[in-house]
Every structure is written in C-alpha cells, then in structure tokens.
Length: 388
Image 1: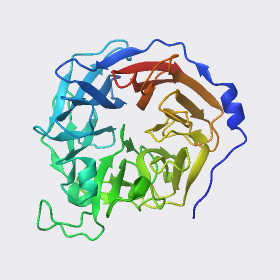
Image 2: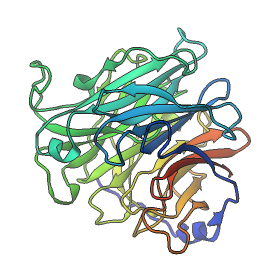
Image 3: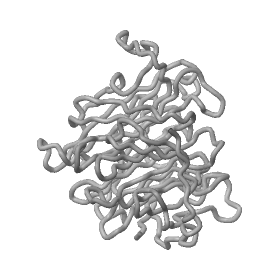
C-alpha cells in the first residue's frame, strides 16, 4: 500500500533554514593524487574516534564508468585535518565504486570493531548494462586494524543480485533479470540493539529487464547479513518504479526507514519506505513532500541509536530544479516531521553547473553532525561540522 507522507510543519522547517557558518575543509580535490575527479563521498566514525572518508577516485574524468578506484583519507581531529590518500580498491582499468562502509561493533571476535566496505564493480557503462550487455558485481572487504590494512575481497553477487543470464558463472540462472546494480552511495547501517542486533544492512538499487523511459526500470532494495558477513539476504523490492539510490537508518523496536531517490523525476520529492522487521519487508512506501529533491542522492542517519526515541538527520539538495542548496534536516520523531533545517552550502550568483551534489553524514560528539559533500561542480569534496 502506498502512502503519501506530508506535513504542515514544512513551513516551520523553512523558518529555521539557516547558514551554518562553519568553515568547510577540503578532503578530496579533483586533479590531485593522480585522479582527475573525486566523487561519491562516504564517511564513518570508528571506535577510538577517527573519521574515515571514502570516495571514488576517477582517473581520467568525471564519467560514472572508466578507470575508477575507491580511495580513503583519515582524520584524527574530528575533520579539521586529513591524512594523505590511501587506495582501497582497484579493478584494473575498470570501475570500482559505490563505497558503503560500516563498522561491525557486535562481533565478539573483534572487540575493537571490524570495518566492512561494500562496493560494486562493472565491466561496461550503465547504459550498456541496462541494454543487457556486461554486468555488475557486489563485493566487500574488511579491516580489523581501524582501516590501516584490508582483507582480500569477497564476492557476494550471487547472494544479493538476481541476474538472468549466467554472464560470469554458469550457475547463475535467476529469473528476475537484474542488470544495473549499485549500493547506497554513503554509509551502510548496523542494528545495535533489539531483535535484529548485529544486522548489517546495505540499501541498494537495481534495474530490471529492458531499459524503460525515465528510469522506470529501476527499483530500490536492501541486502543484509545477520552473521557478520558469512551469508546475505535480500529485502523485498520497493514497489515504486524509478526508486533508485537509497539510504537507510535503523529505528527502535527493530524498525528501519529507507529514503530513496525518485529517478523518474515526475514527483520532485524523496520516496520513503518503512519496515517493522529490520528492512526485510516494507509496511508502507510513498513520497515525503517535506523533502524536496532534484533527482539526486541523499543520506539519512539515526543520531540516537539504541535509544527509545529516534532523532534522525537527513541531507540532500533541497531544490526542485537543480543540484543546489545542500540542506541538513533534523527530525525528533523518527522522520514524521522535519522541523529543524540548516543550509549547508548553495550556489553563488552566476555559478554554473552543480553547486552541491552527493553527501554523507556522520554523528559526532556534542550533538554535532559531520557532512562530507561534493561542491562546486564536482571540483572537490569537502567536510563541514554542524551543531544541531
């Protein structure tokens, strides 16, 4: 059953729409470290307090396909300064991207935490994959030393995707004909209490069957592991055609919210899906008109995990026309309303291209949120702290 999420409090939210005043720190600058462009930011805070910022390092340009690596930088001082660049994944001259990091803090074998980094590889462009040429794969690597070194990659494609043709392995003989595939751009999630304690959840999306106009062949879904990466399971597919890049946050009592880009663009608002069983099935899906969106990525985060009351943070470009006006919103009631908003960054007069684009958020001490985001037509990825 589809539900339309609305609220008269949208006007109240706009009243508190204000510039943060915090200085942004450049983390990745396009044209440095051997990469012409950096895109697709993701960020986590690990036990001990270090921040790990991930991005795609695109060697030859800004295209979504090509020689693309996943790279990382570290901050030991809450984002004021950042380390030199570390290459994390490399798929030769092909694509390695969509980094989705999360820290598993519930595995007794790793009392200091174990970092998972989920990512995708691809053999041809997204356009060709939607036509049935080439394929996408899903992998993860782990680190048990706070991101200094990483394991060999584990291929989980057959567990979390449903391709029609045995493009890689003759054993692949599913019937759903999933073609394109992408993790959430941004962090993944872990349940830290309740019935699903320990569950690692990755929001994702896929295209199914032949390409359709306006991206109607796209559908969001999630995948998850309850045994620290040994096995994986797929969620129910989001029923709205065009549901695309997704982000998810755990809620109290085993609930989960998924917040999704509408690729069709017919309704310029975020799609929201709610689950009462840890993200396996969906109780409701619909559009939240409190969250305008120009067809771009967004990031959602539970700022009070383990508490009975979920305070959510959400970032996206709060514009109906272009990638601009990156905004951080705070919800005191698990996403029903968003009464507090902060304008993070916006276009200056005469600025061309996309002023702001993809972002990811991380909880910091002292009721602060860190936001890692693309700025100035993808010329750099910067970090800013907001006290909410």
